[in-house]
Figure 1: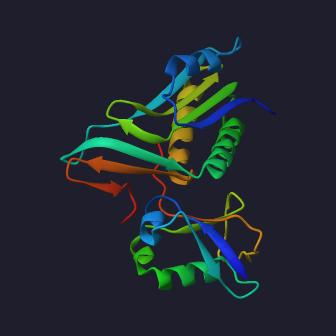
Figure 2 (figure 1 turned 180 degrees about the horizontal axis):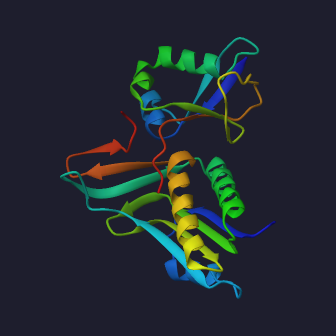
Length: 80
Length: 141
């Protein structure tokens, strides 16, 4: 399945784009996506934290992803 | 209980007085307003600008959650959370948290709770632009 992943802050700088398309097996979960991205872009491993949001909500590692989900990578937040 | 919430992410300059007017309610005896501003230094490096970016839809949803949590903990009448995005200069307001409650103690505690929670979970990112480089805040351990 093809997933589109939105990128913000330092995650956007690391990848060099505002979103990326990722090809993963059906029923892959959040942990699998993170694993794939950490392998492809090793700089993600240097971050303080890295979360995935699915449809505007922080997702747990075991949450299964679908092609029509809005997926975003959430590097360490620093609002305020 | 549904209470008045005014939650915005905006590229426009934040208006503290407007927040004060909007957060007031007849039955409250206390208004507490926190304003975050752009500091001119981090450690010993001179900051020229801050650049904020938000994942807006999710940021608003997370701020609503925080406002609702605060409402269950304190007798809040109204809550305002305004967060600025874009390029800001030293001294400009980055965020306004305003709450009104019947008594002052609750307004202090609620206001602090909201800004602390916002910093932990709301998907907004800040880049410090120094005279000699730039850096995403808190990105690395």
